[in-house]
Image 1 (spheres, helix red, strand yellow):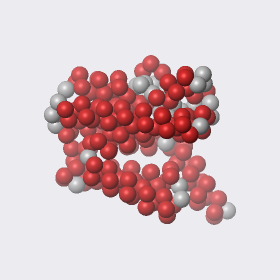
Image 2 (cartoon, one colour):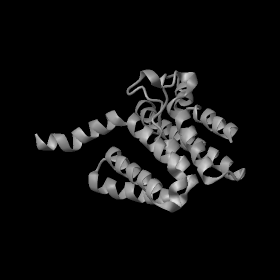
Image 3 (spheres, helix red, strand yellow):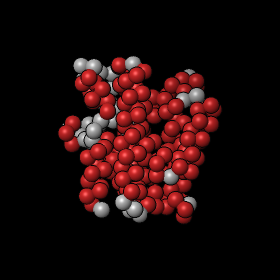
Length: 190
């Protein structure tokens, strides 16, 4: 079990944005937000860099969950593996613990771990984006709902480690959340 979790963390440390940046001879850690994620890769290097980075980061989430299911680990242990792949993405040891923000990796984990729960998350996100017109604020609410479902509904309680992952991801997004809040709501009241 512990070996699986260690492997999950190590898989998480392979940041697609870093490799895309190397290929394009650009250190994304020094450009724009400095984040090694799909959003920064897309802003600096274009749409194709966003897509490649998003898919690469999501696929590592898919990979570790599939490995857990292949070896027939319990749902709880697999969810802990999901937490570890996300932690690897957020805090890669070989990049001084400065990685991405975890959205794409979480999506890969969540989609593969429990399709129904992911469907609720995705549907809520899409509905909220129509109402709020902000991907960041919609994602926050959808993440919060996902975490609450994991913690409150017995059918999904084995996914509690993903609630911890969400909490850590939201901390990593705190400045984006403040910026989105100020842009959408604060300026309207002035």
